[in-house]
Amino acid sequence: MLNTITKLLGSSLHVEFTFYNTKNVAIVPPNVTFKYRKPDASLHDGVVTLVGTQHSTYIVLDQAGEWFLRWDCTGEYASAEEVTVFVKDTKVK
Image 1 (cartoon, rainbow, N blue to C red):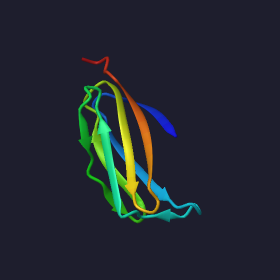
Image 2: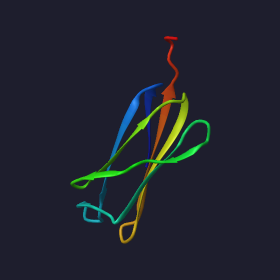
Image 3: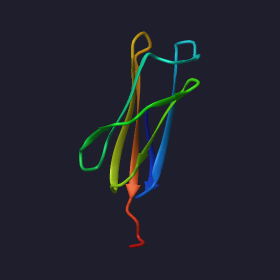
C-alpha cells in the first residue's frame, strides 16, 4: 500500500511502523531497515529505534519535493511498506 502525506519544508518527521504476522499479531523481526530518497535522488538510511513492537526514526525534511520512505524487514515475515511525503516549500522567505 502506498500512502502519501504533505509536510512543510524544514519540518522534522517522526516515522513509526509496526510489523504484523499473518494472524495480525505485532512482531519484532530480526532485521528491520528504514531507507529514504530525497527529491535530489540521494539515498539515505535512517537510524531505527525499537520500543516494544514499534520501530521508529526521525528525519528532517530539508528539501522541497517528493520524498520516498521505505520500511523493510527480512526473515520469516519478510515485508515492506512505502510512504511518499510531498514537502512544500515555504512562502515565508
